[in-house]
Amino acid sequence: NPFGLYDMHGNVWEWTASADEADRRIVKGGSWYDRPYRAAADYRISYETCQPVFNVGFRVVCPAE
Image (cartoon, rainbow, N blue to C red; front, side, top):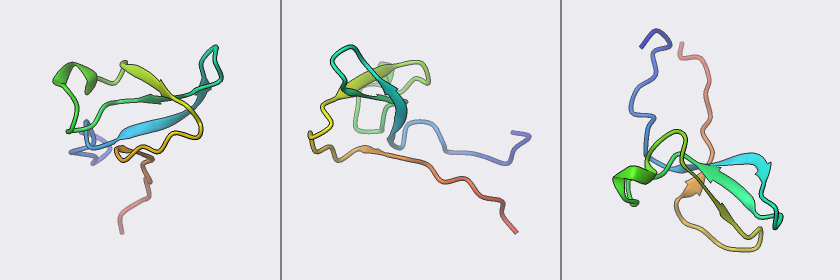
């Protein structure tokens, strides 16, 4: 793509800054561990803030030199 990014889709759920009505944290994107329909950019689920999860993280983007 024009940004030089690849293999970004589906490798980890991403934390967002949003919360649902029950103050649970929202994650998006799906991981390779999940069903294919969950690995979509618009799919969201939520977790309790104290719930441990193994397939949720964040992405770091920096310029390659």
